[in-house]
Image (tube, rainbow, N blue to C red; front, top):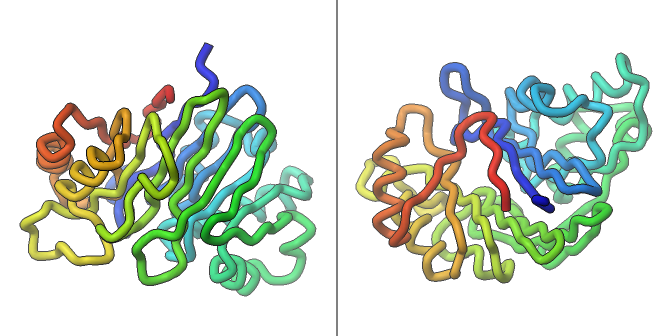
Length: 245
């Protein structure tokens, strides 16, 4: 029996491409159902897999809008349509400040915020989470979740000065791979596909999935570049695909 799996709700980098969505994942174990990042477009895709009432928590990596802006819409659905209160939301101080400004009065009745930061740990039923601040301009948290000895690691957004090794052993790693290494857009606050593969190999990641590719980028070229650097085949975070950890 699989104790932990992750489903892709969106994986476009910066903005959503046609028929796509920004970053978001559904992390499920026998004890908990958790939305990890909630970029624009992910709420519709979430409902292809679970009812909104089945969510036990939301975990947000950072305040950039392509990673959290479905939270106000989720709150509206819970408060005004479904009559649900007290959904746990784990998020950085910056993200909480922005969310409170957008959602306004009544935030804390529908959503129950918990501020997380570098080195934070918390448990969601059988899921054990830990956080590590990545190499990104705003406070951004790489995330690791473990269930029954199996571990999932997520880079969120990061430059090359941070790697999944900061989170400990990872059986399945989801890494951003925003650019191709020689593309003119490549910059030090995101990873290229080559860097994603190279850092995952150096971190001992058991299996690598790349995400956050720009919509105008080539998925095939990104997979090829990451695989060459990783030294083994690399998967891609395709919409609605589920990976067993």
